[in-house]
Length: 205
Image 1 (cartoon, rainbow, N blue to C red):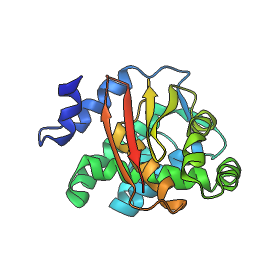
Image 2: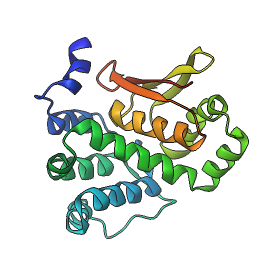
Image 3: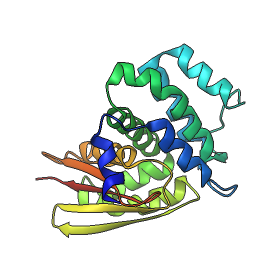
Image 4: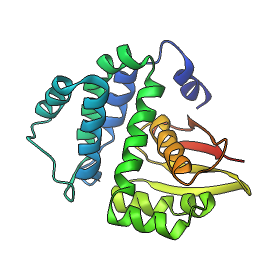
């Protein structure tokens, strides 16, 4: 497990290989809302241009995604994998690209009715907002298990089991959520703890 986590900081990290490993484990029941596929496409368009986004959409065999429909998580993985070589030349690292994808996913969720309600109930309290994160996952994807473990008044971790998107994606999500509620000097990091398991550690002042 330690060597697997450490590859994220190594120049030899192979996103394509990692993505193919994840795809092997995807079942018919493993789905994500179309909202997040559209968000992924928009992120690709922002970072890589219209042509790259159009190529990724066409490669998945779809003309468009309907926000409220559920689609295989394999579609999101394949789009990200196809876009990654070009995005790496622009952004410099898989970590940076995946964090951007995660930030986009968090923005899309907060724009939804469920996300707006979660934000309202949080009342700009970072702890209250992050405590609602497992519910947000359940409203967005059909797979995995997510939980929050608090390690202090202003620190904790998101624990993800059987999660198809890498830890850097989730770090980007948490990073954006903390920014939205004005958490000062927020720090977010992540690591893989197993083939499809990861955690995201966070703190603020």
